[in-house]
Image 1: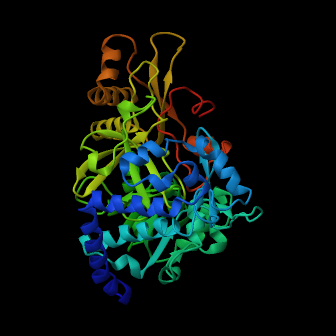
Image 2 (image 1 turned 90 degrees about the horizontal axis):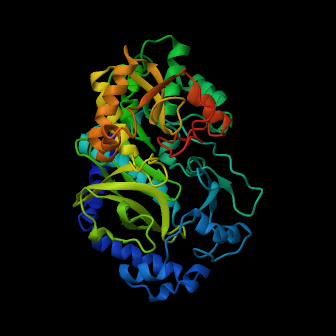
Amino acid sequence: MGLKAAIAKPYARLVTRAVMRRALDAPAVQAEQLRQLVRNGAGTAFGREHRLTDVREHAALVQAVPLRDYEGFRPWIERIKQGEADVLWPGLPLYLCKTSGTTSGAKYIPITRESLPNHIDSARRALLAYIAYSGQADFVDGKMIFLQGSPVLDKSGLIPTGRLSGIVANHVPGYLLRNRMPSFATNSITDWESKVEAIVTETMHADMRLISGIPAWVQMYFERVLARTGKPSVREVFPNFSLFVYGGVNYEPYRARMESLIGGSVPSVELFPASEGFIAYQDRSHEEGLLLVLDNGIYYEFIPTSELGKPSPQRLSIAEVAVGVNYALVLHTNAGLWGYEIGDTVRFVSLSPPRIVVTGRTKHFTSAFGEHVIAEEVEGALQEAMATVPCEVAEFTVAPQLAPAEGLPYHEWHIEFAAPPADVARLAAAIDGALQKRNPYYRDLITGKVLRPLVIRSLPRGAFAAWMKVRGMNDAQSKVPRLANDRKYVEGLG
């Protein structure tokens, strides 16, 4: 065991115990977050307009601050981009995080001096929790790779702008710099395919121990590593690879393919980061759910998904939520986002401490006939089906086929197989049966002959990568939407 690993273990236990003490007092910790946010935001243009000085508790916040998505915030953001200070948060943001919105085009999310630690410290807490509960810290003595966006920022405007991972890359703690790969120059390559090849060149002979990124892009990296080295598995290239850190999507649909490439399973840590704030992380590998980050600059509200679309939906605090209910997530942050509808849906699996699972997106679902199928259901159905019909899935998305040339409408699953099943029709039937168990509305439409069972459209290898490249989404932060309620996402796919 190296010196860093030896030091990391007692430190990890100390930090993780402190985090858990606060997590077990969630309502009080969140109430204090609200007081701090209101105290800082009251003197801003937003704070004055919404009378934040009168907000003392959750009920007053609901009355004072309406819900907004990014479009509702765009006029405020434009004022910030023009250089106006004290708009949403005191002063000017340190950065504007540029992210691709599926409904709003490019979005610019402020990152302030106060909110930046949320992104960095929360990721650090996740790794420390893994060390504390697993007792494994050897990865800190080797190399670590983070597949991410370019750290080069656009400084043509008044406020530097870049991707979240690129912004955070400029603030890597000093104790990690010698371990971190790839180099700044390689990380700065903008073309993703060229960047992956350069990363492979830099890393394929390194003592790689921690690998982090969105599963689909890590999968591509692994495939390129094996192609370049001629090795049968990632473990033979990186024998000390011991921790996979991922976020942004559910890992389960990718697991079979990833473990085939790796040459077995490897411990993993799931993160729930977003441009708007770092929301949760997996703190214990043997327990379901991600621990909500309660004390790092975010106050949460939760809207039951059954209330979405109502003029005045129910808005709950952490003290009012229940296990097993789907909620749309609302954030108030020290980056100056107030009543911000982030677009993710979550479900609590425990309340003390608060742990969640991400169930989907409020605007990504399939409900052409009222079935309202969500990401959690399609991912779970696919996972169940793959256990009985072996195959490896590289990527997939689902869209309705409303007007087929013949027969009833159906859900069309566009799947890029890394290893196809022996019988695609059998896989389709297994997925359909599993989906009907998860969604009674979908089952009723099938049994009532409104829809016919789903159809799989097999796509050639590389289809999704090419599709995303055409849309300017071929970078380490972009994700394939799991579901759509129309066919705009699947046009030209394959």
